Amino acid sequence: MYPHAGFAGVRARLSEIFHLGGMVNMANTGAVSDFIEVPTDALVSADIGDRYGNLRLINPGAYAAMERSIAQYGQVTPVVVGQPTGSKYEMVDGFKRYRASKKLGLKSLSCRVLKGKDRALKSAMLYLNTQISSIGDLEQGMIIQSFYKEDGLSQVEIAKLLGRHKSWVSRRLSLVERLSDEVIEQMRLGLVSSSIGRELALLPCGNQRGALKTLQKYRFTVRETARLVSLLMNQPAWNHETILNFPEEILSARQSPRPKKSVMDSLTKFYGDLSTIERLCTGCAANCSQLSNLDEQKVLSGIERITDVLTEIRKQFSF
Image (cartoon, rainbow, N blue to C red; front, top):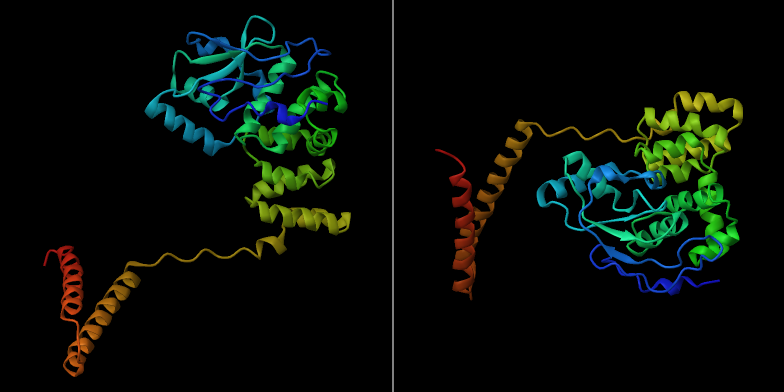
């Protein structure tokens, strides 16, 4: 078993200086055993495929932020691509940059190229994103499932390939395989978050579709989804349809949004604040003659600060 620490040479700034320390044992996979940085000219985005994109989840907020960044600053860091078949380039890392650039109409992308076959490139997806904590256990499980189903690797072989313990592989594979295809597809499209997906994975696959429709209909939060899952797991099956049609227990627990303050409420508070200031100042004026050993500098400094604030308030009005 190759220890995970063997990849400690990977640095967070991979997009600027690409280096992978150590080797990956791929003698049994037919893939090249290491990753090499190959500097290239910008590649036309239409010539780059994203078939590995189905192994990542879409986060609409992150994609919108990336689009704004590229629109304002352009492409700051290169994407990472590979040639698994030896011809066409395929995206390995930088899917947000890639898709945002296509949407904005950029004609080219700055790329760094990894030398490796299919298994090596999918392994790189894990390493590159794990080091910067940008990939969750569900996405890790999707990549592992690809090794398991598409490449025909056993869990032991996957663990050896990734330099991980078999239990690490087993947990993530189990998480993904407990989800129905419909839930996974909704997650890929960014319509269901990974946190909600993790809650749905507690249900049998056959019950996830109904729960999915209910949580989307009522726009459930993660906490509300967890409550729905708990109800379905603890209530008899004959009551599930009633719960899913109208989950009254969950909806009734929602707090009503606080009403927005009206203009009149704001004015009333403003007048009250002015009255309070006036009352405090009047009290100070009445009491100052009875006080001894006053620090003149502190008193004058305080009066000046209050005067400055009142002057600023007065400037806000035209009268």
